[in-house]
Image 1 (cartoon, rainbow, N blue to C red):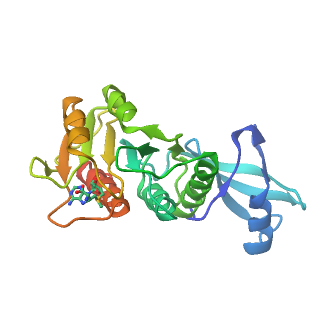
Image 2: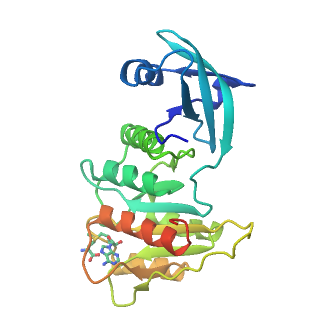
Image 3: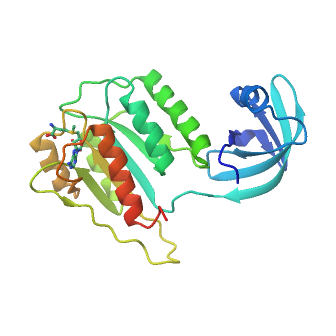
Length: 246
Ligand code: SAM
């Protein structure tokens, strides 16, 4: 499968026929110069990739038929959720792009005591667009879900749905990340919830609350990392330890 793919809405697939619309049309015809008869890959963001032969090209749509279907290609089996303190400027855009490339399944923008950045609907829409572009560019077929902004208190109560809960904290009580991959052939999916603080970090009270709720404090080494670096590094360590970067 080629790395670069195009987005097809699931409601635009009927049997073996498929329709591409909006910016995908512009990108395919003007940028990639694709024509009738060419083969391309389209992904639905829900876990399926389709190899498509283009049947017709017009200003508003591209019609094609499916030649090959692949499920969950290049997707980690582990389900990683990153709950991350909201960041100023375009730093959260950068984070969303990178953790999408790495393989995260869900991103939760978090508000907490030392974070005064607001994430309204416009920002959420922008982050969804960034995630879409990163999914297509990295050859993934699952579009990470980006939730509304959620308070840290609320995130800490979500933990029971996950096998492992981790909070990154550069403090004395933190240990290095230690995860064991499931045995080969195991059907169970490992669901991991990772929490990373905003630029101002978490208060001692917040870390105490997280620990009471079963979150293990983990260290990312002796240096103080920027929040977005921490999210990227934590996702990478977790996927690597689960054998998902091989
Ligand atoms: N002054 C803040 C503090 O003392 O917590 C610094 C916050 S740091 C810029 C932002 C977030 O990145 C932290 O809340 C933590 O989640 C994560 N982080 C940064 N460096 C880390 C490290 N060495 N180990 C674990 N987490 C780290």
